[in-house]
Each structure stands twice: as structure tokens, then as C-alpha cells.
Length: 94
Image (cartoon, rainbow, N blue to C red; front, side, top):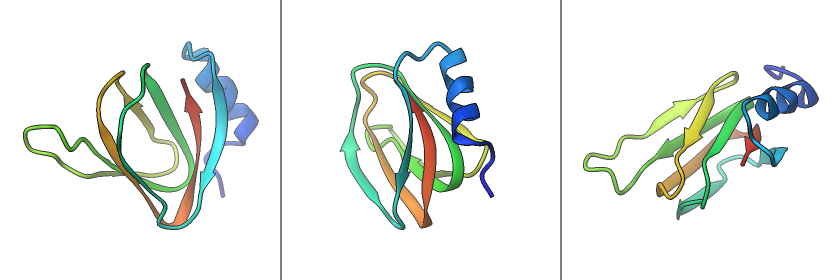
């Protein structure tokens, strides 16, 4: 069961000051190679798990987040992401 309904969660993320807000679903074990974004991004997880690391950190650590977690990534910060075995649905704010 999702943490929140997508529409309710999108309203929350908009209230945090993000202009571009949408819900996204990745399939099981999806992977995003190291990349960055021009602006601050946030991810509010609704279902499943997301694991993230920052490979350019001095000592990179993988952290896993589940439903209800908010994951912010600073502008320009290189990150790498894996989705869990059941995939992941999250609201993105840019």
C-alpha cells in the first residue's frame, strides 16, 4: 500500500517550493548510472525502495530509503541510484 496517494504527495512536494512535480515509477532493479541535475531535486518515496550513493564522495556509502522517505539531491551532486526488487514509485520535485 502506498505511503500516500500520488495526488496528495504531489501537493506536498509542491508546497516545499518545487515548480516541476510529477510521480514516476521504475520497474524492479532499475538502475541509473552516475549523473547530476542542474537544480535541487527531491524524491518522496510512495512504494518500494530506492538506494542511492554519491560516488564522488571521499567515502561513498549506499543508503536505502522506503515509503515516506524524502531524499534530496543538491544541484550538481553526482549520484547513482538502484531500485529495489519490487521497483519504486516516487514523487519527483525539480
